[in-house]
Length: 220
Image (cartoon, rainbow, N blue to C red; front, side, top):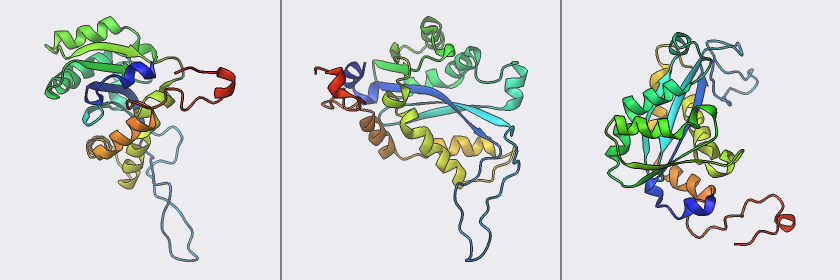
């Protein structure tokens, strides 16, 4: 699959996935005076702190507007995380218009194999229903491949969470804005770097990250 993705213009290669931030998010490091106790401030120290879910999408040179779902919205939908209905809502409310704004055609959308992603026909139809014709193909990555193929998992979401922690502590009133702002303000150079790190740039050995090349005996 990496070989196929390498052949696609990175401006036309989109990745979509879900992530989350908890209300008790805090910086992982802090500066203190010599002899003082190191600590970080949080509003909720519980491992059950409220979780705010986000759907995000990117291309090789731009970030598309995300969608944040609150605990109250998940409770109203009687789900623990993001379900297919929420994903379709995101396409209808935000993503369909955003991909048309890229003014690039055709586009390929790449997803992992989460259950909410597998009905590709309904996802494509959601774009069509919103008048969006730019997405011509939706691809599912092989099982367990997201950490190697997806710039979101490897490791744009990590950069985003670090940016969020720099704005912490967050509150119920600020967390949604912090999540969206930190995503929208990630620098474009990170996109190029992570696409390259995932081996998506043309000319990269598609087996560069094979854990045991001698045993697998790959051929180019």
